[in-house]
Amino acid sequence: MPGEIGLDKSDVVVRILRSDRKTMVGEVLPDSSIEVRAPLSMTTERIQKWLDKYEPKFMPLVTQYRKMNAVLAEHPFDYGGEVLFLGEWIPIKRVDDNTNCYTALYKDDTVVMKPGLSGADMRWHIRDLFYDLAKPIFEKKLHYYSDLLGVRCKTWTIGDARQRHGSCDSNGKITFSWRIVMMSEAVIDYIIVHEVAHLKQLNHSKAFHDVVAEVLPDWKERKKARNEYSQLLHCGGWM
Image 1 (cartoon, one colour):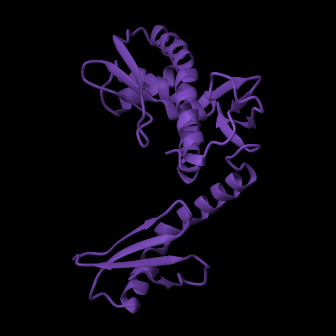
Image 2 (cartoon, one colour; image 1 turned 45 degrees about the vertical axis):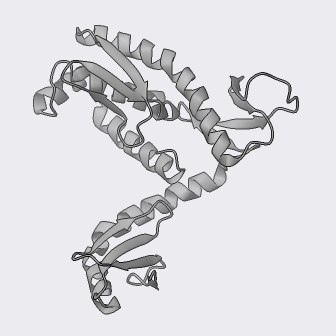
């Protein structure tokens, strides 16, 4: 049965899920709570000791998720709210005329949508809209950085991955998640360069990072920003 216990002196909610398992694992959820999956025989006292031991691992992520959720609270996703596009919060406007042929449209730095959509429907249509908007942006950057690094991308595509921002297979096919179009252009550039660099080095060796650094000397800062966007979008239910 789920339960709640304290974690040190903080006000973190910890949910205990006991089941017929042999080991104990814990995970920080996007709402900044901690979910502990434990064996049926594990006492609450033993779980508390385990949490005390791993507090240094959990608490930084709890703190980070709380910060992200505070940001999201300032930018609600709904009609009259906002959504991230190219790293900027842009308004979501409900169009009064329901006779238009589109469901979601990007116009004047605003997402315009038909009225009466549920939250899930809004997400679905924004997915389609951002997928279309991402294609020319990614294509332009992909060609630019391929030329800069002296490589040729044989084929590329846009996918729907939630956890992988991009990938490059052994055949040189590059895939980007449409979701990264919600991140800043500096971060998008980093993700694209990262995959293009794999056309030279299909690994994450020093030689690979040297290729990335050729065009993006500040790639470490961009990578950090990418991770922050990932956490924000994860808390918002996009990743």
